[in-house]
Image (cartoon, rainbow, N blue to C red):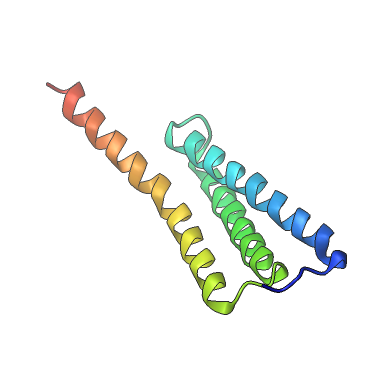
Length: 102
């Protein structure tokens, strides 16, 4: 295990905070668009937040000196984070359609 540079603490802290913050922004805006509380135009902001979150996650992986394979796994996790809200909305929407019209 490699030791972390004390100089990189601020970068690690900022990257980790950005991952959490922009993840919440992505899911929040996505949810508001799907429940039609804001205009569908705002989904672009949600995807922008996801992009910043993904960049922050990759930077965090680099700053903590993860090996390249681990950085790829982190990126794959971020792709999952992009797709899972779509899948959950699909399931909720289909369930609502099925039981609302019985």
